[in-house]
Length: 420
Image (cartoon, rainbow, N blue to C red; front, side, top):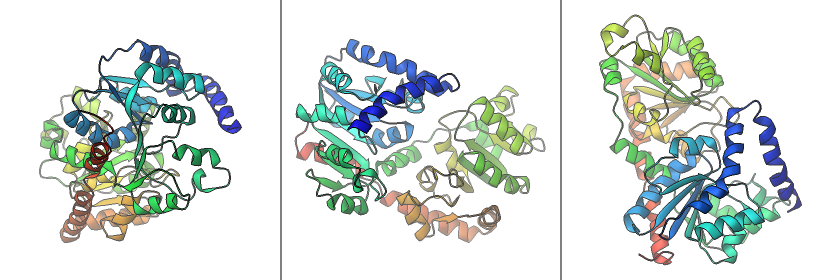
């Protein structure tokens, strides 16, 4: 507990210092200072369901559950909170929620003020959220808290001698809904006192929703008509360096690069990395909306607008999902595989169950080096049968994984955690 309190003390100090050099840290510090006052002024006039997500990825996992709650329990207000600016900013006006706010950093006084303000009927934390004082306060007031889409690994603190505080937090949940049996088996070694249910990963539900209702980009669709298309999503500098050779040597293919970050420095770096490239914003300004005025001048489109990637994947002949050449690992492969697109990834993917299983089924190919990356991409581009079989395997796997959001709702209903 002492180390946790020290962390709570030092984290905001570190963020303030980082704010002198980092705009995200500066935004976070400013938002934290205003969050409690903002929530205390909110008057929903209906009982509240509170969902907390660390960032945008967790929100995408939680969204199918929120949509089901809206459908089944329309009499409740939905409060959506984020810890990171990268989650809050794109979702601050999302229509699924009645209120979207930052979650103030944990602490006994903060948790008390927060819960006194919202009086939640049900709380849902997504994936990796463990805040001791919030959870303790909710538990002491008998407010049910669900942890959904959770995944556990033996490397986490829960399973080591120093993880006593984390193990204590597990008992504060009403139900823990895990993604896979391996997570449930790990929790069984701790003799967790609350029910643990294997409910799957709600990301499968979310990508199916997007695939069924994609955003259309008519100008891009006109541009790529009749061409083989390569889409690289959520790329980092390490990915771009690895991809540069392939992109430079496939002029017959149209390339769409979607970097994970879209700040000016990142876009400029991508423009320098990829030959014959133009940013999406600049392309729009120039009115280049057809094959005729794009042909021969630009071979690569750098997307500098948030929210396009998941719908762009459906146009890919072959896709690359970024992150695998960096230490943190790959991003969401399901956004591509749901469309039946063959995917190539970098070597760091072992923390992601869906990627491991897709590799085993040959629905995804792994490249450990730039040479392997080129070889996989070129083979998939040239071999239509391989491309088709790989894509179908990936698509079948992704569709079979749906249904997790319904399981969350079934538990809420079976345990009568909410009244209609």
